Length: 181
Length: 403
Image (cartoon, rainbow over all chains, first blue to last red; front, side):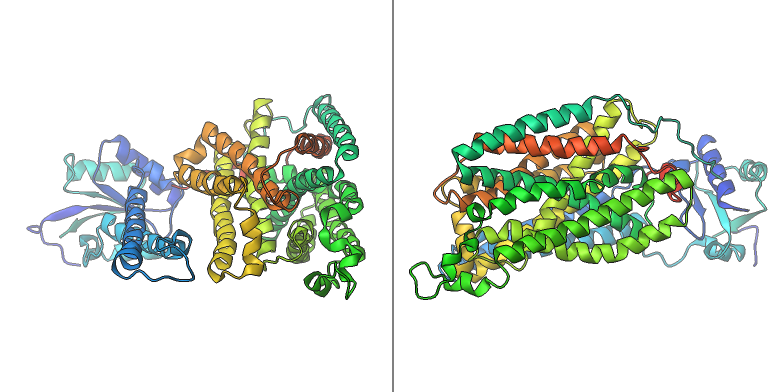
């Protein structure tokens, strides 16, 4: 890995031994006032959201919005087709045939809710993202295997390389490195 | 990483509690009043009795399937609630005696039980009922009731007994036995509950049939089971029992089940209606026709609104499932409408011209309900309120919210 001094620094990456240490350092970063940081682990860690002081996801509201949209589209579509544009008498039932419309209304509500959930998740996670500067670190590949990493980004207002390193050192990091963009 | 959670609450329901006695008192008064009603109007008596009998049997049966599912999936989420369910199931073999009045009232309740319908060539001859007579005849009906209660009674008694045994012996090997009982138990349960639904409610109108009725019967009962569970837990907490053991995070799970089976109920009940509505075959629509006129339609619309729409929209939000006021309110609402729905299924057979409500409906409900919950609390106070040596208990106690 080549690191040249004139490259822009992305952040400081530290490796920890286990989920417990990672959770502890997350709390520490929050308490020290950092806001632009993230943690990386091979599997979800219970209690990490709380330790990182993450707000509740807005995804639910996105899904609800899409669900209501799907519901309205379904009703509007069928109303236009069966009542306005091409009314057909089917076994004497009313044109506005509410019970018969339920399955399609349900399907469209669920379909758009699912779209909202999937694409809303992409949007909130900033996906698709083709490259992350952290991939420049050879060591970071362990995050998909047995590595537990924390990173404080240089964009953070409080970012000072020496202080961040000291914080990680104190928290018991086994390996600390600067990552460049 | 995490320390072993310990139970700080007392596990014993107060032995000097007057609750079972009071409930049995209510039950006795209610039943005696209802029996007086028998001499005034026998038809009304049997229909009122059948509605309440179905209501409470449904709770016990739902408790049974909940326990078996819990064992077979090796779940940990609900270990703290399992003894409550088990205390319902342990009484099913006693509860079996309450099916006897229905057998006595078979001619009042079930039109198909009249033998003259089968006599070819007479004026009363009914071709449809005649065709169904190999299944719908009094002898086989009685045999079926015996089979149902033998199966449910055995499963319920066994599951409770082994679980209590594990409290005393701390033998985790018993959980394998519980799974062995549960696996075939679930299969038997599926058949017997579907057929009980056909027998008790669907055959009230012997000309009508719905292949979905078994599932529908299960769906209404299982949805109404979660409100019962929630209200019992709230009651225990109000008495200061298990307040540190059953925590908010556990109650949230009950709310989630409640929500899930609200949707399931709506799906099943609506599917049954939609197919019949759309096909528009007279032999099928007539059942709904009688139940959508003369005031009965309000119970149907009531089910749609208060059993599905309102609980669905209210419980959709996660915070609502953590709120005791909301959860308790929805539970009470759904229990009321559950009774109304069974009433709506059964009663139009007797009153096909219009809505009718009798004082016997109330006394039968109080009578059977008093006995049912009296039996429950009598059983519940005999053992610890949670299975204290269950292998999954520790998991359950250290549960936390997923974000």
